[in-house]
Length: 351
Length: 170
Image (tube, rainbow over all chains, first blue to last red; front, side, top):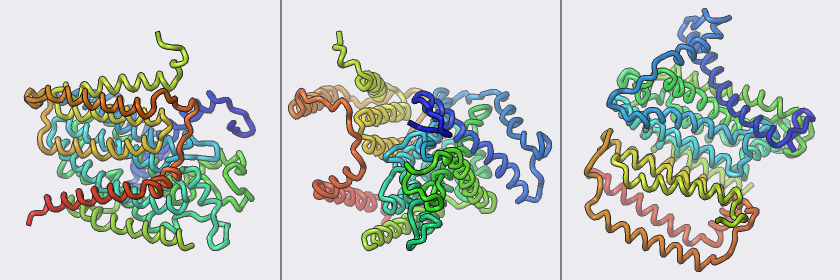
């Protein structure tokens, strides 16, 4: 029985809380990321103020933008394949919602405590490629199709280093369950010193760097924004979309950035936990209940830190050329991540 | 009339998913558009993944999604969209010998039905299926089934080398 602040919650209440929590965990980061980073940080980096009119410091700009998109006409091109054209943004957004389902936010604040957690996350994240290909093809537009094909090629190429970078973490934690990966990091110690736990950021630094590069590419953020390269492909697979279907792609892009940042923080930064030695906890059952409230806040902070890095790179780097991008994945990232796996397994067996 | 003890949640779930899979599988071969056929195949493969989840085989289910939907189908779509994928209906999609496929499919179904029937018979699934942990699966693969695993790895290696040889320009 889950307890929230010493309150017994029945099963249906837990399910309701989890569904609501899932919606919040997708939409809240998306909105925050768009306002803080896309509106404000990008403006400051370009020596301007950004939106200032709607609400204090432009904080209600998002409401205005969403209202604008909802009013716009939902246009389907005449030669397009209407059913698939309309389905595509739903597939992309659905993959984000499926992805957040395995992220743990506290000792009991999880949506599903899935044994194959990391593996599931990697599998489900690849579903968005389907939606992108559907959007690119069904638009009946050469730019869209080219954008969709570029996106697919890029996402397939960067999926591999992402999976291989995670394997190092799995070897070290001896589990694929994200909750247990969090526990393994916070209950761990570095040479007998347990005040910091053992965040895999330290031991798996190579894996962390590869994973960050790979999610940058998976999110098609610059320097990996070849699929939506606006100077050559208008807007890639999103070219023909308008109104709330464009909004769905837009939410999907930033919500996925948030969810990937959450997964990164679980894998490498210790997730929702604080080092268990601080409060004398030993395993997940001995963690106090107030972590169900504090945990999500810690997760949110770490997510903002990681998204800050992603956006910083995005706003300050030029675009990779298509062949450079593929060569970088296959000839640099994959060999390095294979080497990381080999070294991690040697250490695991020897130590 | 269906016996009442068969009307448990798993069976109803199985029936619904199986029905969706059958309809989708028929649409794969009857639709007049290559991309639509591929997308219906995605539905069939996700149905298979859902059936694995019903059998408490979550690792296999996730592998199904990762390999078949995330990789194979994406490559399928990628390939068809690069070469020929018109929007709208196409008339010349069917192979003239497509009727030969019916007896082959019937034969395959009969062989699988006989194999499953003779090896399991009236045996029932445990009413409370235990989720097999990933460590147990890996112990089996790298223990009792190590030799088949190696053999499969060599087949895949040969396929990769073959692909490289075919793709080389010189």
